[in-house]
Length: 379
Image (cartoon, rainbow, N blue to C red):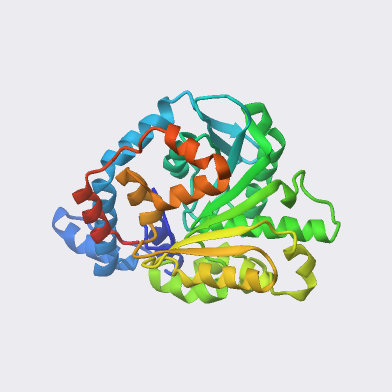
């Protein structure tokens, strides 16, 4: 499930507690005072009617998609084609999952995927639906986990993801992957982290500093799904959506982090122009009805990259929300335009054959439940 900068349960709890001063809470002595105490406790957490509504909406949204979650979860835990918890570093969250195609006729292209989660609740398992559907189309998917806030801040997340990419670049051949056909992909907060890791690595290479054991040249293309690339433009928007400024700045390591970890801002720095020239082709997907991260974020980043001479394209998906691209549409079965585009880019001339041999995408959730979920979604 996608968890974004919208007011999710865990995010709201962290932000609410962070905004309250130290207070002594007196526990009521009689059962009759419990309703009054409950109201006071909600006020203490700054949980008003708006947040209660958000909680209820999130619960309804998840409940309506349960048929899909059960099927995806069953595949994740039972399939022999899913290799879980492969260690790529020395931190507890330095793990990744591999989704392998059933056939092993030759080296496969690889997608290194970084999931979203508002930098707070990301998990590699969130990419299981994408991993399953791409692996059915002869593509290996590596879902990279990373430290979340407050376990780590943005520099830790970028470091983890860079280590995960390094593992994929240097070890994927052992699992049937083609080291010369590796694609980097991120969704929501994961798109931002992956873009930062890519730009940081390019900067190291351009300045001839010591680098990790991978090279930007090993990445054939970067795919960004519903990502945010200019934090200056998004900090107030996130604040209004429940990811409060104080928490967001803590994640980004202060005001200076807004510049240091804004790929769109960084690429415009003339001091790293040579690093920008090393970046692989960039393809950004974004829904025009995305309220969690507005689509102008992807469009603006692509425009800036093109202006600097880097191949970049922004594909706007009309009427799609933040979760449509990653959850509702894949659960609908049938033809998925974004998935078709990804397969065509990755497989090139062989894409039609690959698509023809792939099993038909089955529906995981009835349409009326998907539409209802979209209606009640807090994202």
